[in-house]
Length: 256
Image 1 (cartoon, helix red, strand yellow):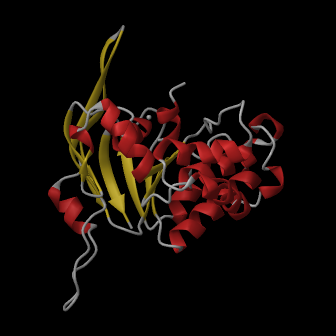
Image 2 (cartoon, rainbow, N blue to C red):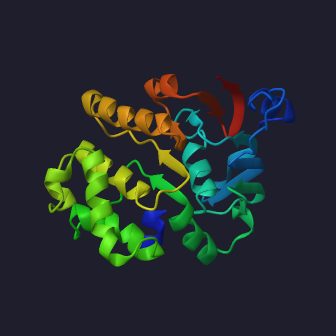
């Protein structure tokens, strides 16, 4: 599996304006950290073309906790893959922190992703031959974001933040699914990215373990991290500052 892949897979103008932060007299309106504009994506199958996304548009502002809510097949994972640059859109624009992701080559997207986004996958995507520390430091190794001497300490600090530092030298197979997801979140935070993306991060967890993961996301939001989580989990939606509903590849509703 490509390590870069591991580290880093229609709303109209009225809706976008409705959910932009209000402009207050004497204050500066923040710029969006993420802008998705008229993005469409289709896939070819043996049965013909499948339209995964159709003219999707929305904006995310720094410090927001956004939940993209939808059933299986709604286009949620496709949307995460396009924003993270794992895949490329057929049309439209994706601007992340000023970078035009849609205009990058595959190699450019892979390099950019490791430095600018944290991505948490439903199935963890940890390397089985590495211990937990190494699964986190690899993110820093690929981007050279910290001096080599500081990377192990950074990984240990993140494992402590995730409350699993005692398992630091174990391989992923020796810890539970919930603990593996905590390692995946730690890896996503390794380079201190401005945005954290998560694709169904609680989909394979029991309710007790899920609650622990949700509290981690809530704590990150309180610290000012920008979160974009795609899910069908109503509990995640209830904790988000804003919810965008996706159905059949289109945004059908947005709410605070």
